[in-house]
Length: 251
Image (cartoon, rainbow, N blue to C red; front, side):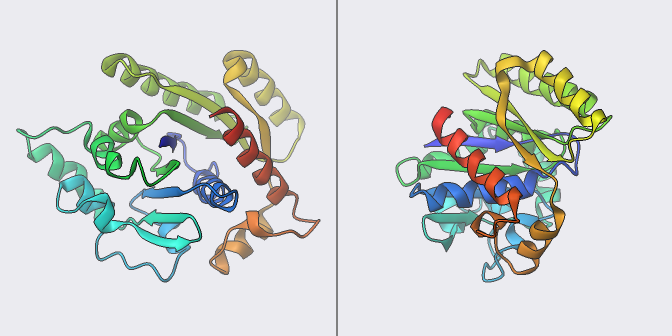
């Protein structure tokens, strides 16, 4: 099983939309996918109204439940580990368990599904804390979604620095990729994209996700994912399908 975290210290970059559609698109391609909602806002979980959060990722991280006890099938080839607001308090609870391992709990939990799934996709909160460290350590690859605005370079620098520090400290064989999202293709965005492509080089994915908020909002309202839309006017769905093909091809 390959584990991919989607992470950016800056919010509002389309991270949850990308996580949902990447996982769903992989499942539509016949891959068995475990989608982990790792954000206390639980926006990923809210897309699946039939999911009960009586047990969530909080219980997994605290050691009260296993991944297999918590995960729920939400679509063909797609399982969800739900989240809820209690995840906000979980980091403090883990730190209080000072005699137990703290940084590799998620890695150990995901090993329980290594023979059942092809991919695990982790939708991380936009922060660096002990939970995020767990996600990075558990991952083979980190995708950094970036909205190419005036704050993008700074947001990437902070995220990249944290990833590299954890990689060094834990001697991880960990790679990362930049994914440009919510693109309007104006001159300012083109310059930001040029700068980051120059900085990150081969670590930038070829696929770019355009800004098309209406179909994304409509999909969310209808508790579905935009990648399933085949309307020729929904170009963002085509972008997301290209992303799935690229990720499956290189990761």
